[in-house]
Structures are given as C-alpha cells and as structure tokens.
Length: 102
Image (tube, rainbow, N blue to C red; front, side, top):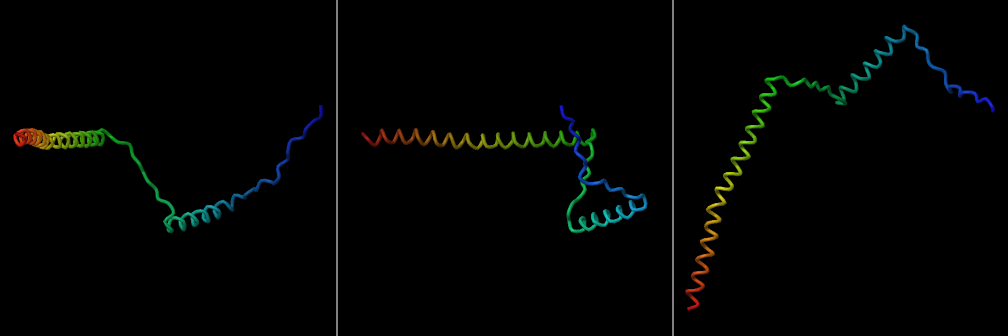
C-alpha cells in the first residue's frame, strides 16, 4: 500500500491582531449603516401572542364566520323569491300555451 499524504491548505489563515478588531468592526458598522440608509433591510420584531391577543383573534374569526353565514343566508333568502318567480312564470307560460292552442 502506498501512503497518501493529506492535502495541504492552499492559503495560510490570516491572523488578525487584537488592536485591528475595533477598526474592522467600525468598517463593518459603517458598511451596514450605508446599506441601511439605502433601504437595504429592515428589522421586524415578532412577539408571542398572549391570552388577550388570542381572544381577539378568536373573536375576529367568529365575527368573520358569522358574517359569511349571514351573507349565505341572505343570498338564499333572495334566491327563494327569484326561484318562486321563475316557477310561477313557467306554470303561467304552460297554462297560456294550453289555452291559446284551443
């Protein structure tokens, strides 16, 4: 068997002295500030919903469900007279058709 040597790193790691860290952070902060001023990103904070908020969400859902049911019932109540008129018109048309044939 032949022994395979491990691959050597292609570049040496950069060792940053402790006194340069502050300069790098200042440059990074300036870059982020410039990016933020250009409208690059925004921070959004999302909190947990507490019991009061959960009750409000439940009430909103119930109100929405009641509204949908009311609209469906209203549409059904409007459709009943329209259906009655269509049936009455069909009966009258059939009656007049028989009367006028004689």
